[in-house]
Amino acid sequence: MSLVMVPPLLAIVAVALRVSFGSDGFEKMLEHPAQLYGFVLFIFAQALTLIVYPIYQVLFSASVNTHFELSVMMLLPIVKMMTKNIVASSIYYMEDMLPESVIFTVDFFNAVYVATCMRQASSGFTVAAIMFVDVFHTAFALQKLYKTGLEIKRRLNQDLGSNITTLKLLEVACSLCQHRDKFERQNLSQIQLRSCLPHELSSTGKSTLARLEKYPLKPAIKAHRRRAFTKTSIAPMSKYESVPNLSQSPQSTGWTAAKRASAKIYAVSTMNSIPTKTSHKSTASRTQSVLSSYSVPSSRILQRTLETMFMTECLILTEYLESFTPALYCTFLLVMVRLPSAKYHTELDGITQDNVMHTLLPVFYYGLLELVSFLLLVYAIRRTIGMQALYHLAFVLETQTSLIQNKLIVWMLLTLTCRVVHYGFDFTFQFSWIKSS
Image 1 (tube, one colour):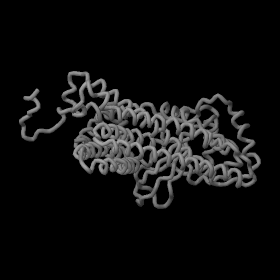
Image 2 (tube, one colour):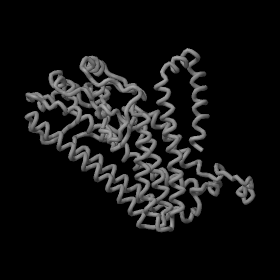
Image 3 (cartoon, rainbow, N blue to C red):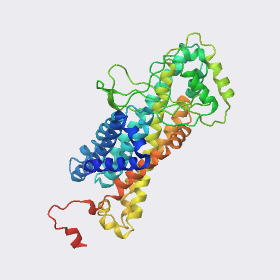
Image 4 (tube, helix red, strand yellow):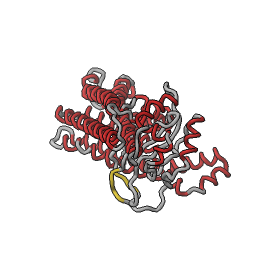
């Protein structure tokens, strides 16, 4: 149904753009067919997500109270990985939007349907298996982050001749970009300067960007040009704020997606200013002592730092989304079960005001587990790489507010409020549900 409605949706969007921007503006948009193609491909990728997860729910509902319940439940991580790859490959050329676009689409759907399956599961072992997989995934991500932090600290201590005991990753990146001699020694071929998102810059940030643009940085990726496709793991990319000199918004995932065969996708940086309690001079002075004694700095430290910050952004966004989605799902059912229209919601089959609390207990416990995982991740990021994960999360939510809010509103409407018998099909044209009501 979703895929069928995509062409009419595109037609409505085209008419709205034509009316809003006028003939001249619309004709200028048509002069960029590659970007239009990328937009259409991204819409179709999201529409595919609307198809895949409902099909999975039908499959899981059929497996409840059978020996296949656990096996079907274990398919959900595979479905998540496949849909992430599809959505990520459709918007690979806008790397700063990649985490928000993928996580607030695929991870939101996955979190909602995990909660749905946990409510429907008849076996306590199935519920425990879901929780175990989530704990294992979080532990694996934290271990990877810890090893990356140790690697960067080892490089700073050995290759650069310093003696760092507590790694502060953001300060290292800022100092490398602030000091021209150290920045020139970095491998810049895989680092992109400009973001595809608009940011408000301070005068210091603008001057920093103007200075860094003189270096041979990675050019912006063009939208869906002819390219060779291979499957690999996308190395973490990153989006950077400029702490009056550079800070970043990170992210990373193990998404496998199409990429250029000629080069691996690495960190992508975008500089923009964010308010900090520390002045520019104090930030530089704190980190100058770390980098001032370097004779021959490692050429990949900046790139590796940006990759780690990208990984951090992805982790914190995912855990944040997964921590509040179960609470949202429980609140929705607790409200809907008390409304007269509850009998039309397929999500409320077998649920009454008397048993709703008991039915939602597994989902509630799952939400608590996700909240604990989120808090542990925030603590681990601070201890491992010295970054304030909550500030990082706030930066993403503030700079991409409209994109995130629009997605969440639309996805909540489609995944929760549209689960009613009115949107079903009766090819016999008997409409027995009307007569029975």
